[in-house]
Image (cartoon, rainbow, N blue to C red; front, side, top):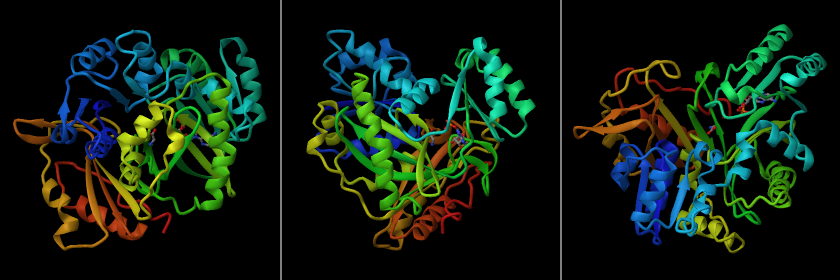
Length: 434
Ligand code: AMP
Ligand code: GLY
């Protein structure tokens, strides 16, 4: 099989690493990729939303499967684009079509879907300029803090949480007036849920699904969860507070009703679903759906999946997942994100990174049985033969080890061997759980 992965982050490097190990693989490409994917396979200079460019490349290079990393091409309908043209329609696209991608592309759609299929989530109201007064009344009926979400994709910035009701009302006006452009022409106001968050993942073929390892990510830039939100500063898997009983509730109350609901809606969904969950007193509630894998969760969960990734993706594409079973490594994974100084605000790019080889070899160096280190590149690129920074989130340092504590230690030890000017990472990951 010839496979093209779309995206350029740590998630895509982890996917590329895993697919590159498959015996079913012939040639692997990543577009646009990063220095990490470039060392594994061929990077192609194409942007993820350039559907025509991607289609032409696929035909020229006999691509059999396109694995879509980020949500935007899915929400914009890359699958529909491929399905609508005869010569492209035989290419498997891993990810939902536009109708399925609304689970992430429209908060209102996702909330309505959950309501219809009795999936536990926060109570809500969808507001446009036509019912602002009703929206303000709804705010009045809620206890603070107030959660306002732009309906559409807003580059991860469309959720605003405010303590003060007047501020929330003003924010509602601002959002409806275009604070997030078209994405906030509709706003979902939600009840605030107080609990501890985690991420659950499945690969589905629209009928059956494989439950992948769950993870917890760390979103804030500062230690002890302070400061602004980021794309994610690291993650761990498994999640200690998501035991067998809790995960059974997740499957019974959330995952199965979601897959069945999609089927009832006539949505042919073949791809990953990411359930953003919150555990409230032992019961799971859905905060959000994403129609892709998480980043940085992927960098912790993929090393724990022992299956041939390409084989299970093919099964998902052919609607034959029923025949597959997951094979999960019992070890713990911890992934630490190294970021550029200034991120998530302004930061410089093009800074040389050193120590990568030492870090990669740090588990075998002293022959630690049962420990493995993985370096997944995010914002990196190759410049004149050197690896330099090329984004806010630069590298994910992951490890697998016998306990969470050990995995964290290994990842931190490897992280400390890497350096670039103004490099920053959180040093408290997992401390809340040990
Ligand atoms: P979302 O983009 O929907 O995941 O929201 C971003 C973040 O806002 C989530 O990861 C939560 O930390 C927080 N959040 C979203 N909705 C709620 C809610 N109803 N109650 C509490 N926190 C929320
Ligand atoms: N880690 C959260 C996300 O991928 O959206």
